Length: 65
Image (cartoon, rainbow, N blue to C red; front, side, top):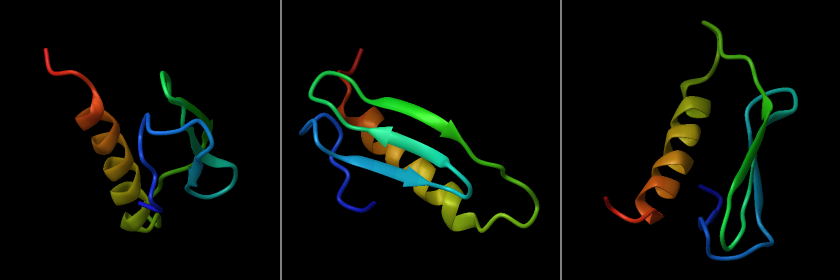
């Protein structure tokens, strides 16, 4: 996951996908997600796996309710 550590710093960003991609900007309080990418029948499943990995890492750092 390119060592993306959700909420651990305010200096990381990670871009996943083709074109501009989806960018995750890390912060101590917030994570900003922006951009766009196209997923089609030719998209490498690694792109989807990386998106899921980052979102899961973010989810796991959130308080349990």
